[in-house]
Length: 205
Image (cartoon, rainbow, N blue to C red; front, top):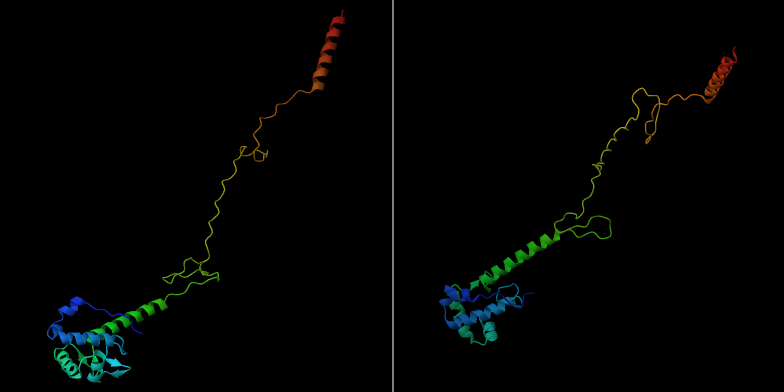
């Protein structure tokens, strides 16, 4: 189905030397033919229901006497405005070329859109994007994830010099060497012995 409009460039129409060479009446008939070709299949061909439109049919469609239609078509063909296919169908070269170009662009766009993967929903897999690549990175099973190596802890500080047989746990503080303390019993015996000696000395004559 063709669009309800077609491209018309006034500058190209007025600047076409072939059109400028024909009469105003011939140009009017040609624009009528272009409107019929826009609705025809194949596009750009002067056909009706798949059959070529002859001079008599075109005369009835445009309201122009058939003899005038024949003369105007001959004028347009002699100036190179219209073309005739091998089947005898009148066609517009520009309309056929524009239609082929539009179909080519449409097919190229369809191929590009067909190559875009659809996003995966509710599957646990990363969603696809417009460029065909996943939005989330996945881990390759061939390369397991690397875990950071444990940092060695520094050795605990030694609270005692080498050779010390005492052991201390964490948080202990070094203690001063123990001093020998005199026995209370030893002090008492020495005092009694000293007192006895004094008494003997006093009792002696």
